[in-house]
Length: 300
Length: 300
Image 1 (cartoon, rainbow over the protein chains, first blue to last red):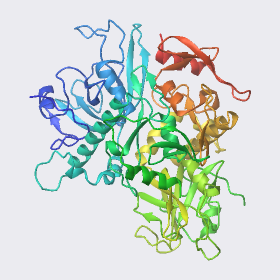
Image 2: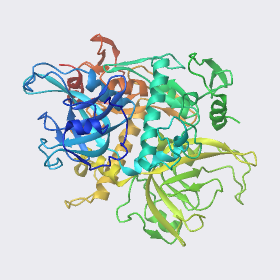
Image 3: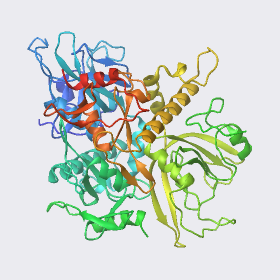
Image 4: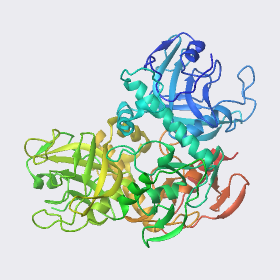
């Protein structure tokens, strides 16, 4: 059975569910692999990790985890090379950039008071907040990630901003009301696909200034919503309401230093003058309703 | 008695404490003013707001608040002019930029199930996550702010990153252990002063690229920590460990696309070549210990 990469909770698999082994985790849709710690790719991000005592450099303080990346080990789990920002490691970096939730699964081999005594346990959603290289005593360099648990409040806060989640691109086939878990998961996955499309079309280059930020883990950009998500604006989370921006222009756009005309010219709010044209892409149609709504926040 | 602007909880005044009137709030150090809704200034940010039914445009959903700014009203609270990003409004924008916590106080005149029936109640810490202008039916424009409650988990997460908070610039005069509230409050206020100093010295211009982002609420920049705060690096939250960066270079610095030499040259990690010198300021001494620690995350 193919693994479908899903971000967020998996319906029917609430936090604290126990699984006998890695195959059971994979079949439930929680983690893609039988052996790797990280379920993720550079292009899509990482949706899950397993903590199972693979690295002495790991630290597990429950809601705060220092997790060591993958690679550079021989068949006996001996470090023989430096790790790099590739494969699963690049997936976790991508999840950090895009604030994607990562499922944390603890295994029985982990030496921590937070680990289960047997099998594997799904322990909720975490966010990657930082990564860095660490030089081990043996001289090899490993990647490390700081993960923090996402609180229930934080998850619920985001829910109202996507009230039409049940009827667009939905995975549910019946008319029955979808559960909280399904709504959260659908929202997260739709968000991930919107972000991926926008970044792909624009090759991570800012539509205002053409800056493309090159990081060791790959190019970076931000996906800005034109009409704000969530209360009270309730803009939709889809491509027609999104822009690919560098962080600087994202800040300018969100704080009203720049806005767009109906011809997609970029206006400097201080002078009211156009400073250039928004770069567009044939696949990326922008709905002027959202452009007008954003402009209305900042001009009469 | 002068009001001392303090960010975070006020010791001895836990959440849900009731106060008879505005003067009691001011004397307790919770809110600067007798009448204004916003306790804040453009330079320092806003530390508190009162919700007391002053604006029909407000919305109070408990953990989520849509709050209307101040100004443009006559003595009878009739709107006679547009609001602007000045005074208290500029304070709330500043708090949004710098992620400062805002105390929310609800008054008995507020028409909401969340309001107290008499007096004023301190209802915890919130974060400003967005602001925009709204055109009212009468044609005047008011500023609005979306505030979200900060969870206890989020507050506690940040605590370990400042373990020396009790002995540097501390407000406690005894050797007695400081309470959780005191530690949180001291940390938040020290953080606010570090951010303020760094931004002031560099006039919000990026030390790498000289970009200064001009927003309607004033210039914007970010304060980056050279050696990361929090576990596992535990860099200190002080000026010697901080840089004034634009968001783009902040991202590059945190993800290892750029790092510094001991001569404070900026190195592009892809080429290993210097791309320029970090701009410095005589009052801003940078401790090379932190520079080396950061460099060590990204190079051998």
